[in-house]
Length: 453
Ligand SMILES: *Cc1c(COP(=O)(O)O)cnc(C)c1O
Image 1 (cartoon, helix red, strand yellow):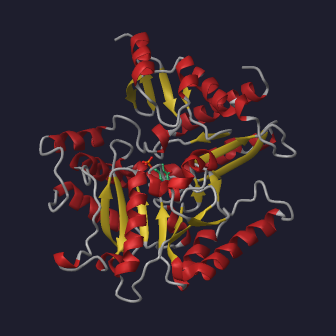
Image 2 (spheres, helix red, strand yellow):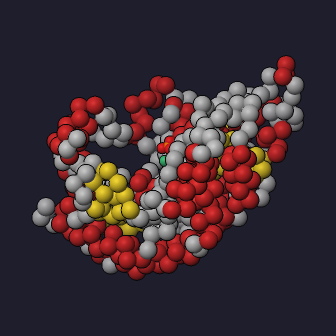
Image 3 (cartoon, helix red, strand yellow):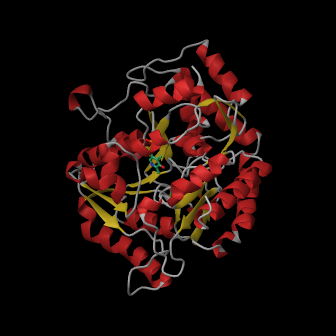
């Protein structure tokens, strides 16, 4: 097929996720045919820097010889075999590695295939745990979540979501949750200063958890950074505070590290930065280096043991997905974890985080840049119509999307969250590419907000 044939067939048959399809079909979108290192290559041979890490999952670049080889070698053994009542070699090895890198006390791994299912499993495990726990068994049906939370797109994970644009449509299908306010002071409600608002958010955790504690099945949080909400960075100590408050009342904490895991925040896992051990830990996106779909929900012996019993006791976790623990994906994950250590990827992340901090320092002064947020190598630049009032652009202005188009024209792929421009370099990306990402996206922002595109 020629590029235009690919495009017309794409428009005719492929329904793209999170994509307004009418607008999409009006645009000439690249069709990716290949990749090399940190660049994607389209059917016309044009190269684009992968500035989104292929939606936050690519770690070491594309076509990494060690991961390619690991998958090829696994192909010569077995591509898929079920974990339902059966074990397979790469999933056993990977479970051991995940336990080794996870906070101490997390000893059990439940595999699935994407971030939403990792969260879905965590929610159901927490819910069932309370019914079967040996001490104080009972039904707890309430999950605490943050405002603007994002935990995936299946109905359970949407239930614990808080992004109106994505989630309000399904409201009547969702189970009830209690919301605590995200501790982010970019737009503070009337009557608060930035400082007093953050203090209020800390206090709300305590109030909500105390008031409802005997109904709460679990508290779910994206540790340190709320990604899909627009790279909202929490103040230091908030995660620690949530852990202390929940631990004091024996409420399980679910840490959704689907986005933050595998180096993005500066440590292998975000929880490490506040010495937090959650009761359930969700991993996906970067777990295979961004190669294949895989997820893991880690938990403690205490929770796992509440599911033990004889067959007739029916304490089993009756949940599982066909491709759970897929050997090819586990082989990719094992190879990716090896590269993390061998290539000292965390050191690269620290260098790039500093580089980004330096490069972005001046952006805050630009017209229409309302806020520049960064944690590690996750960056969100919020564009606003009015810098003084922080008033947003009207959605019809498609400001974020226009920055994406202007970047793409210059050979860089990005994907915004509304009017938040996201820079998501891969953890192993060399510095010169990160500079190019900043150069191009900076130019694209100037072009769009100055009305020159
Ligand atoms: C992306 C994401 C998910 C959902 O993962 P999918 O693989 O897209 O289902 C869940 N939680 C967080 C924090 C995410 O960023």
